[in-house]
Length: 269
Image (cartoon, rainbow, N blue to C red; front, side):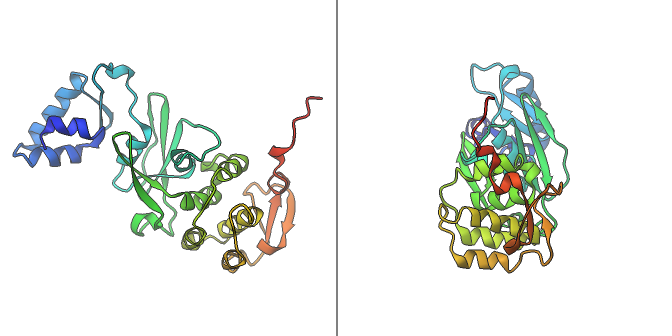
């Protein structure tokens, strides 16, 4: 593939990818670097972060061009994976639209602010950090002319219940997950076990039990999770919000979650 053709086929790419394509034709890495710098100067490319470039569409001014944040997130590290609320949003199942996008990686990194969006790295949990695909539940999907690496809805369910701050809090998480018509429940359970957190397992179990009919949850699904729930009473919320003990999961569930308080009708008086 010629270097000029590369721009047309890969809307966001890394320096390493550009070097691999260009040197395959006999050019040196130094020549590749010079060409990249030239195309940035002439407005054909923008450098999003050191080592990450985006192709500017014809007729668009470079200073007005915003590359797709999902494509950018996928290129920020070799293992970077769109996750948490951003994964729900990518799959069209987020209640709210954000301009913050979390991505998983096994290495520490700095957040990236570019134009009107922010990309936030999340260090993968220790239990899955060294596993292939950071524990599984990762897919690649064609999108906007490129490819996005993103967690599945099944993994997203577990991830946002494990780290609710990355999901927008309980109301946003509940409203978003309730937009999903179907989960592969065996995959949900497998990943919840892989993550290795008893409180996360119990949160997943409680959510599935609360949505038993809608999601076709069977007793065997709940039993598989309940076997790994905390052995002692734990708070559902890390802030220890007051609530009621749900004995089957050994969780003190906040009243707002227990009763879905956000669904209560608004009283203008």
